[in-house]
Length: 144
Image (cartoon, rainbow, N blue to C red):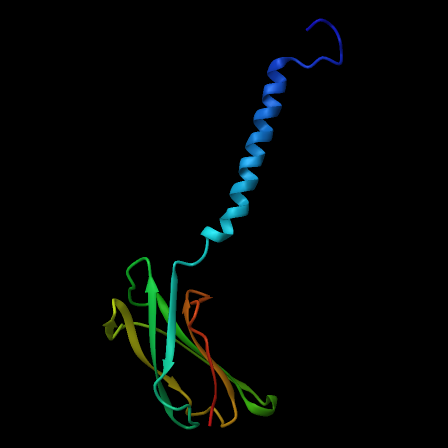
């Protein structure tokens, strides 16, 4: 240094440039992270039986995953709100057995208990992976 307080050594300038470049790269990575963080699974549910109060309704659930699908990894959940805001019902069961495969996708035929769910209730049945709803599986219906 030649004694001037306004001069910055070349090494310090390179450090500032390197830090700025690293910050820009980190910002670019963070901006793309949510896109690549999407869950690697999707699925679907089809109501086999009509949703009738006082019965057990069967549903066919399937899942598509990049990893092998194993017992207890997914669960089925059914949530109902009773008419006139007089109550609700929630059923959640782990899927232990995937009963058949169609087009390379595991399927499970599962029962949804509507024994105590009154007619007119608004319900949603879906698959869950942990506490996350599996994309494409939420089916809304009204109990008859």
